[in-house]
Structures are given as C-alpha cells and as structure tokens.
Length: 198
Image (tube, rainbow, N blue to C red; front, side, top):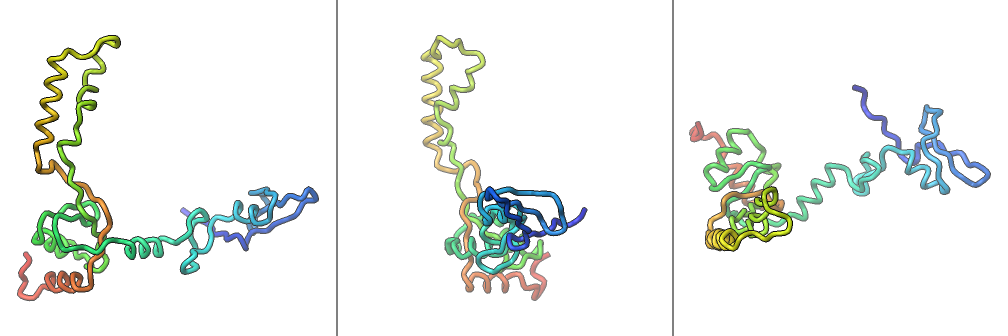
C-alpha cells in the first residue's frame, strides 16, 4: 500500500479564471480537485494536510495540531493524579497498587509514558423506572398503562437499587498526569533488583 501523498496549501497549483474563480490542482496532477471563489479556499480544499500550529509538522488539513502535539496538550491539561486507586491504564482497570505495579512490570511499560485515567463508578442506581418499563414495550397494549402491580414492583426494585452504594463496575473517565515524584516512585518499584517480580 502506497503512502498518502502530502500536499500543503502552499504546494497547490492555482489558476485564476476571469469570473473570478480559482481552480486548484495538486502538483504532478492534471485533474482539477477544487474550485473556489477565493485562492485561500481553493488551496485549502485541494490540500491534504496543513502545518501543525505548534510544531509545524504535517497534520491532516482538518486538524490544528499533529498527533504528538495533541497528546502533549491533553497531558498538560490533565488533572494531577492524587495517587488514589482505582485507576485505569488505557482500558485496563486497577483496584490497588500491587496489581498496578505488576502490570507495568509484566508489560514492560515506560512509567513516564503511561496513559492514566481516573475511574468512574457505574452505579446500579443508573437503572431508572423508565428503562425497566421499556422491557414491556413489545407486549404492552398501546392504549393501556402497565398494571399497578407491575409499576409498584418496578418502583420498589429501583428504590432497592438506589440503596446499593457499591459500584457494579468502573469506566475509564478523565486523563490523569503523574507527578515527577510518582514517576520516580514507580520506576524504582519495577526495578528488577532482587527479582521480586516473578
């Protein structure tokens, strides 16, 4: 598979018609790929990439930043990790530090490059009466409400779910950033001195 050709706006060949309209072609091609009422519009439409606003590297024409600068920006904006568990590394869930460290060690991850996320609890209370009622849509008559025995049972069921305080699962939520001290701590913990990890 051939690599995608990179064409910046300044590389586009633009011809001006009397109208005036601007006809744009890509270098080495005879096919017209864009027509616009402005030269800037023709160049942008005919290009495949533009320069990253931060570092100048090639990025898709609809993106402001390249992938590297996007990742750096997200990390800079990430909330500082308080060191508490549970957390996620990518989509892997860790309830305690031992499993967290074992995962880093076993997968030979670079601590300073880990994508760390906070963990958001999924509570049983998210199931509300409207969702439970939807279970009856296929068998319920269109012009009749559910019998009171069923609506009362649904209400009681949902109240019991509300009372459950432990999450039934967790989801990765917001990006977190390790402090230099945390990075140093976990780098030290995965050192194979004494071969503590098996």
